[in-house]
Length: 134
DNA sequence: CGCGTGACTTGTA
DNA sequence: TTACAAGCCACGC
Image 1 (tube, rainbow, N blue to C red):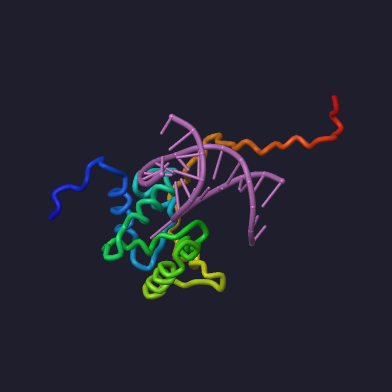
Image 2 (spheres, rainbow, N blue to C red):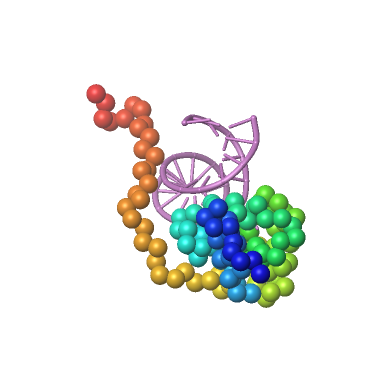
């Protein structure tokens, strides 16, 4: 078998291996996937890695959804998004009327990724003709 | 090196 | 509900 996988060559392999670990009938978000791959805060990378897959891949990419159980593919590629939905339903995953995955199928988050003071600076937009005129 | 864009996420307005 | 901002990574121009 493959003796080893592309070592640090790229984080993609890590993402793919993490995807293969997703239990059938369950789904994870891109953020969770990145976390499972040991790449916290790299949700976008997870999506990019999946986008690099080819159609005949054996990676169960359909078990990866967007935050809140949304199928991000539906927006970009409705066709692929439909394939994803069909595959998931085939695994017993339920969807709501909005087309989102039933949160019950979402793998629970383990621990709590502490969120260090990343307070995003609120877009302070000074309004003209205000009281503080000087 | 900078910019724009993309299967991302979260908080605020 | 949508739109925007900021953070993140990768790729093409």
